[in-house]
Image 1 (cartoon, rainbow, N blue to C red):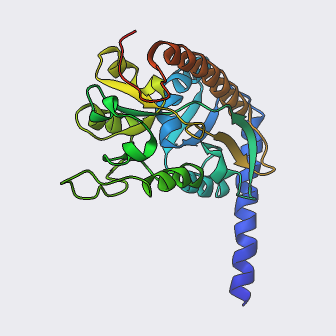
Image 2 (cartoon, rainbow, N blue to C red; image 1 turned 90 degrees about the horizontal axis):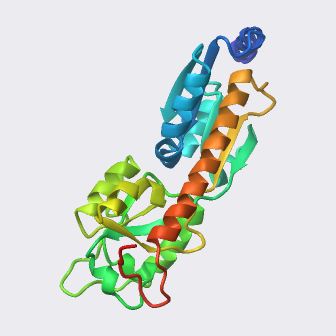
Image 3 (cartoon, helix red, strand yellow; image 1 turned 90 degrees about the vertical axis):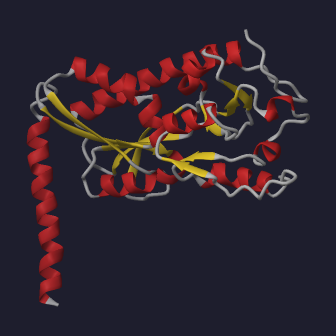
Length: 271
């Protein structure tokens, strides 16, 4: 019992000492310091390639560490102070009482993406149930808000004649880039924003087949509750929000160029 009491107070003292060291470092501003940020796979592939170089160029004295993992793991790392910021699915991070939302990012639309010439491109009608007759290349674990409508549509999917039932998900991928490569070379499909498949669109290798209202991102930037925002944290959040606005504008341009919704079917037509 005495050991348990000692450990409880020891953990508080160690955390307090770490926070004190951090407060001293904060006083030095952006000239020096460290920043650790965790992001989900979609954030890592859509925002990080633009945001991180811009931040590093503007603040060369700050050591930046980037980690990619699932939202639940990122939440745990923020709680234990292994990460200063986490950026991932809001519906997961917002439910953690130890975390405080610094900012929420506006939704980025997602689309069912298939290869050009896929059998679904001539299917009438085209809906998610029809798409789920083919393999789904999933990127990490889907949040419940996305998984629920997919499973509801899957219950309506009819097996193709002479083809064994397709498992769900048929393919689990660590990155969206890998899922896109699989889709471009097979009858599998995935969910992706248009910016992530821009090169394949230009090469006429894939098409956005379907979009439904729930197909979009919901990202939150979180920190440990009541933990002081360092200048580096504030600057990174501002850069992330700027990058996000830029990505949203580009997504709208790509939608106008490449997505041709039709109430009956979505057939590929080059702009």
